[in-house]
Length: 168
Image (cartoon, rainbow, N blue to C red; front, top):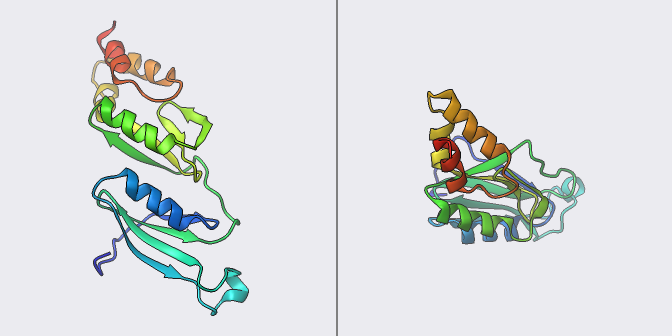
């Protein structure tokens, strides 16, 4: 990570899939790469219980944001209380990130632009125009957009939001 530690870095706890998850995420996002991988040694094995030589952490960067993936065992799992928002400039980006991140994920966890990927991590795929529409000073416009958003079964469609915004 360029020998500079980011002040705040999300740490994602996996059972044993940290390396696979990091490789997957860097394949989805441009300007991304794996920075460093560390391995468990003999020291502490009575505490962590992980095989010597197995991957402990993977430091990686997604589009400029640093992350750490940790193989910590099955003790903790992801839930929807934490998610990562991917802001998208247009429908093409929404479709791309939705398609990549939802592939192999939990289809039952897909609603209103939220999804859970194949590793159990929650993501929100959000067009940037949504924030502009729901913060419009005209409450009728913003509420129509909010209603349309809440009726979205899975992936957000920008045209649907625009129609609601315009009162069509």
